[in-house]
Image (cartoon, rainbow over all chains, first blue to last red; front, top):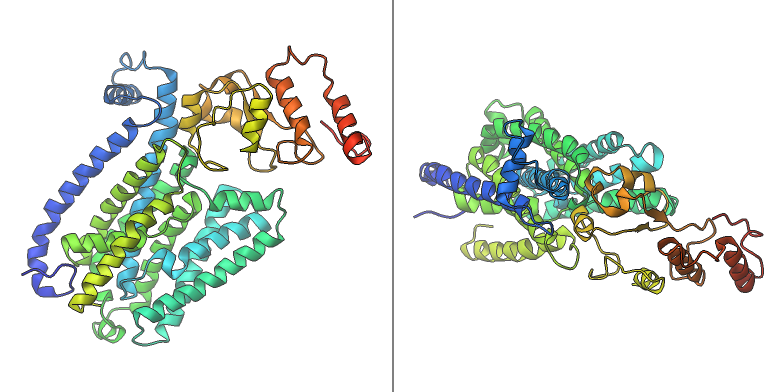
Length: 355
Length: 131
């Protein structure tokens, strides 16, 4: 009998066997969807066109792409490809961040937006534009520093409350979010409505429709590095899920390890937030779905959540991109999908007494 | 949407007429596929400017970009593309921009002067307005 999403280690062996089938199916779906996302849209680009353009770019065969209209080439290279790459990067980043945070906080409700990291990253954007510079690099730097600040702040509070429950964590998240949100509101109130305020709002409302290679160039490598190291360090996360005393009794340098995870989580969340704005629920829900499919060995959950998150956000972005009457903000759709799922999850776990 | 009515009153066809909502969010692909002859940017400072639109690699096949037909509403004194009384000037200016041959006889500054004189008691130039 397999208890879905449970923490019991006695079923770990059978779950090891579940990773590879699940991972290969998800990867296959992901690759299919990626090509489909490049294929469908308002400008008609066929699969043959896509292959021809790739061959052309790689200098293998330049004749096949010669008779493809310039319009299609531009839509493909400058609109769809960067947008799809950005959607995958952000989806993977938020999901991995959520998976790691849920273990670090030993709490199923931990996620970047619940803890307040996204709100802090937003305030970083505001402070950068208001006091310093509106250049992309400076904005990203501030966004990252504030993300780290929020995570360290929440750890400082949580570690002073031994045995803190789900409710306490959510309350701390509310406090931290409110503080940073208030700071941002104050900045928007003080800033010039004709220039700085517009710039700040433009950044915060950022969405995938503003994707370009500049954003991809900044987000993709940083997210890749962050996820790479979090996957490398994911073996230790299984122990990080124990109580502080248990971890220390194993001779593990707890503050150092926690700091490593926090830095990488803050890095990937804040670059994502600064590039595309707030995307709610992804970081909370994807790790839960991942665990319900492959079990709770963190070594497997982290890489699987990355692929599943990329797939999920790419799917949603492809849908909203093709709505006939203009785009709906992406968080509307992620919330509509994820909030009912979380409700069902709580209901079913509550009934079996897991939470 | 008010700006839609402005464009249509000035004798244009709004490429974004089918969009829902007040301020709709679209991707570059929508602009590329509707391929407009003219693009009018909102007169909010600091976010968009003609130069960055002309330089956007994604928009290079769009007719308005190829022919450099990107415009921002001119007034330095209050916006002409917002739901304000002055927006009648915005409509006239739009008409003159997209149908220059039909509105050759209109001197924008003179019209602006008389409209401001009528509405506020001071002419546009007296108030320090620049086109």
